[in-house]
Amino acid sequence: MNSTPIYTNILIRVPNWLGDSMMATPVVSAVRKAFPQSSITILSKPNMAPCWRGFSELREVLVIEKGLGGTIRTIREIKKRKFDVALTLPTSFSSAFLLFAADIPVRVGWGGEGRELFLSNVIPAPVPRQKHLVWEYLELVRQGLGRPLIQKTVKLAFPIDSKSKKEAQKLLKSLKVNPQWGLVALGPGATYGPAKRWPLGYWKKLIAQMLATRKETLLVLGGPEEKEYLEELWKELLGKQAPRLVSLVGKTSPQTLAAVLDQCKLLITNDTGPMHVAAAVGIPTVAIFGSTSPAWTRPFGLGHEVIYKAVECSPCYQKTCPIGYICLNRITVDEVLKAAHKQLKGGGVKGEKPPKGVLV
Figure (spheres, one colour):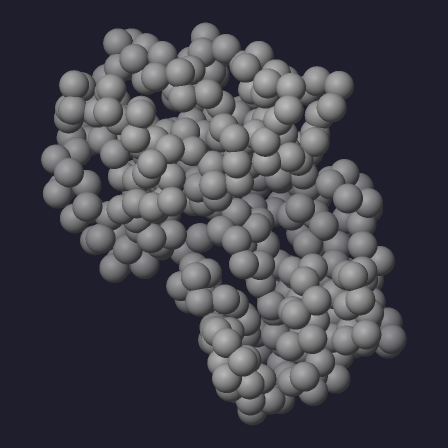
């Protein structure tokens, strides 16, 4: 490969999940700085496509259509644009195949699981989960596109458009949320599984103490699939403390969620997608980790507080635990409450300097 390649029409295949998508946002600014005159297009699954449309660095966002017919149409659309290079961030077989089928001459991605068959520039996969995913993505860009990506600081991004801001305001108004003393968001769920969830009993005690010691309104966040799990929480608490405890579970799109979080002082959460959205809009977090590793997927940026009680089997990355979720049960309500009070006195979120050996 030429040591200083010049690419004019770049395609980036982005991740499928909300959290991973947020951690991939620095890739856009890094590629733009490395190739300031190039056209950059995002290729995304439908669920994440709206999250990318606000980035000024992009020419357009292409959506991967569903089904065999949709895949064929997607390949045709990609071919029409005559990209000279494509970068795939997901590690799936299908993401590499799609770029190959679209006849893109330079196809960059991590090797493994047979993807080498469809990639022209195979980058050795990093040692699993040893450094933050943001740095892994940026190192893939550096190695795969053959340009030094020199940046003093790196931060996540999620541009919030006026429509999303209005939708968030309308939602909060419809739920009679009183923002007079500020808002604190809570993320007590996790679709990944119980091994990421701090016990609901602990959340109940935390909420009770927050309501007793603070004046902010508390917003409970979660997706539609978490309604049943969180039902116990709001059956006992929601309504009794209204209007200072409000459920937004199942009521927000990623864009509306970002706009809501942008109005909050703090997010207290398990390791979830909304945790990374908060980091992307510059909102401090108190992040509670169980089976996963903060080293790999902590909220990115300076100004977050991570609570993690590693045990002998940590991090196991399991969805359930056969030995009683010791790592989560060891995290006390007092610890989380203390961290929340500290964060509410803090000074916001800042970008991070690249570690030695990354981006240069």
